[in-house]
Image (cartoon, rainbow, N blue to C red; front, side, top):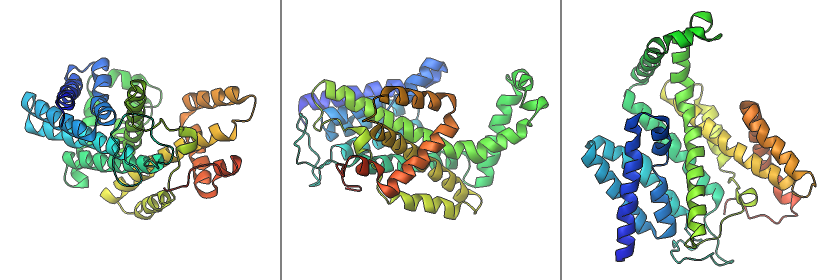
Length: 332
């Protein structure tokens, strides 16, 4: 490893460790910075090479372990730095199986790792990490469930008790806090894997754009609307979630997490499909603007509709038909 790559890897690892540590402040800014923990590792892995990114991962983990404890260092490595390093490595993986490290826009005849397959990796990692976090709260599902319920009830019955009772649909005026706690443990926690998937993809996109601005990104920035294609194996994951959902305990937890992440990916593909289907329409900016506004105003319904459209695109290849077949081959 070159001296410059070594130094940039060490620096990125230390910056990532500092971002991880900001959560102890408990402020909104600290929490937001905490969620950006993987960004320096992603930038180094994409802009320099995967060895510098791996070094950054280990340096950050060691720094966190020394400042806090061994468990925090392991959590930093396994939940933040190593997953984003692996995703960055896959991003620069060419079809011949060799990760390119030469700056530039990439040759037109090189088939880079598909965005859809990369998104599936993100979803799989998010599901595994969500399950691992839940297992840390209790090795058995009953212990986990009771722990989450106790935590949620403690928050609601503590400093927020007065505010909760003042809400029209929660507490003394509506749904009991105990039911809210059970809903959080049974549904919200496993479905948080979808939010983790979205956040990771956004961090990867931001890192790629920043590296591209410096001219160090080996591949051209992808045209997401046209190149974000989920492979049809995605349907197997969806069917698997339906198959194990009737079982209670951890199987249902995994089913909800898997279904939520796949629904998120399908919604993203649906949004990409909308971009392609309306690209010839003169009112395209207005249509897209109204669509994004609907995501903000009526998020569950709009995302659900986009997920259905994404599923239709997965089955019928709507974008390829609209573009006359000029779309990358699915699953490559």
